[in-house]
Amino acid sequence: MTPAGFAAIMDRAYVQMRPWSAQDITDTLAAKHNMMLHRETGGLIAQLVADECEILALATEPMTQRQGVASSLLSELITLAHKQGVTRIFLEVANGNRSARAFYAAHGFAPVGQRRAYYTLRDGTKDDAVLLSLAIA
Image 1 (cartoon, rainbow, N blue to C red):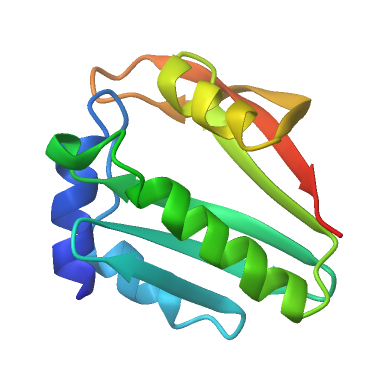
Image 2 (image 1 turned 90 degrees about the vertical axis):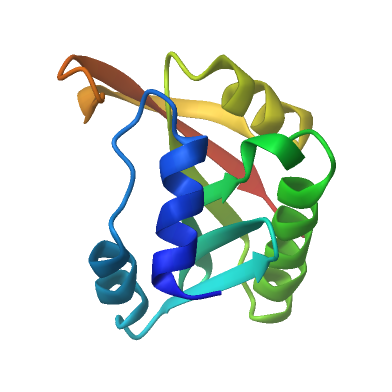
C-alpha cells in the first residue's frame, strides 16, 4: 500500500480526527524503527524500539470495519513484536472515539494515562488522548 493510498483510507475512516497526509506517512515510515503493516482495505503504522512498541496509526475502510481487518493487523503486529522481544505495546486514542476504545479493550489494552487536549478534531475543537497499554508475553 502506498502512503497516498493509506492517507485516503485514513481520510475516510477518521471521521472526526484530522487524518495524516501522504507526506506525513512517508516521513513517518522513513524513520529507522517505524514500519507499516497493511491489507487491501486497511493499514497500521507502528514504532518498535527496544522492548516497546507504539501503534502510531490504525485505520480501515469504513465499509470493511468490523470484518476483522483491524484485528488481523493488530494480531500480526503482536506476533512480530513478540518475535523482536517487545514486552509492551502502547497507543493513544481519542477519548471520544468510543468504537476504537472498545476495539482495543476487546483486545486486552487497558488505560494507563491521559493527555489533555491532545487531539485537534476536524472542527478545530480538542479531545483528550487516552493512553492504552498491552503487556505481551
